[in-house]
Image (cartoon, rainbow, N blue to C red; front, side):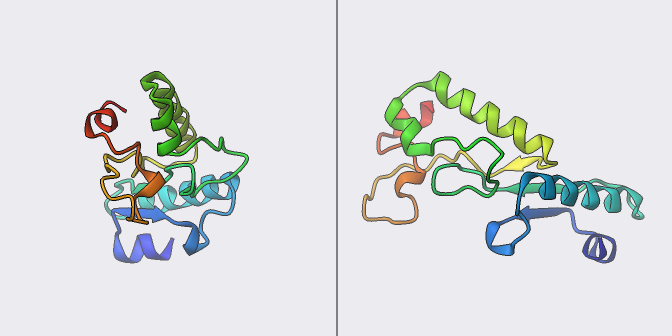
Length: 133
């Protein structure tokens, strides 16, 4: 509340290393508190709350939220409808927690298998297939 009211931040991102994403109930309460403070501040403008809920190895919100397969698993399946359904589930659950922006999925193409950052966080190595998903 102090951060929002003092510095008039426009956005906040949740990361597990910041220890602000213990469980979905705590996240929803945190989001509601942030938005309440923003609404009662001078500007009354809501804050954009975001996270990077990629699923698979990058999962900022844990159980009892749905734990979905990561990008490479979805890419291996090759189903656009399954990928769209996973994204819909993630988006619906994040919205229920007050999170309005997710930095996933992304359009990374795994062109360098030795790159440990992208790796399984990508839908695959074929640019057209990745674009389709």
